[in-house]
Image (tube, rainbow, N blue to C red; front, side, top):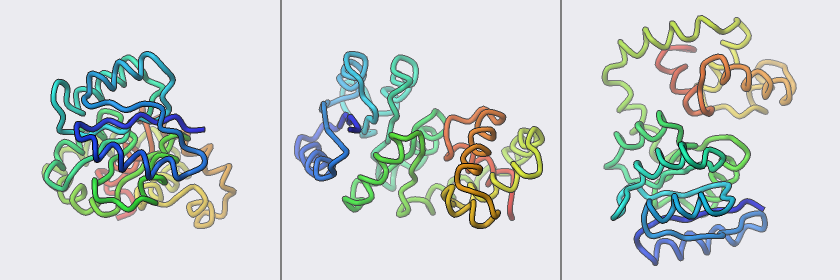
Length: 216
């Protein structure tokens, strides 16, 4: 079972998220928190596989809680709940190791997919907000592009091919079909790429690939 912590200062939203997640037979909402401080304390006290954090909360906001969880409960994967108006916070969250983000109006099936992806070490970007993230990344891209290209010099040609497909948002299975590899082989390449680039997850690697213009 995937053990989930739901954090939001609005009880009705927490109740709605709990109802959606517990409809999946492999997910168990084991704790709820009304602010970031409570979330951090709960994650320290018990095993939490995935923590859902709202950004705007009293006492301790989601961004501060994310940093605390990465420091004190590194095995807990974090998904940020956000709105279109908080895209700069989203970019910061991804850079600091969040497993991804969702919009609060996401479909129930999307929320379940995101939790499952995070639980196995993957990442999830809400399709409805991807364009807003890409638009935000466009500003100041020149400096980031040069830095990204320098980091990618550590990769082999084959690793660059796999990374380019990560940048397109392909799954391991789809990337394997494109490159005529098994899914297991692609997974091995992805793990090697994350290690070489010192990336926490696929989202960070994909953003790095886009900054470098890989696949353009």
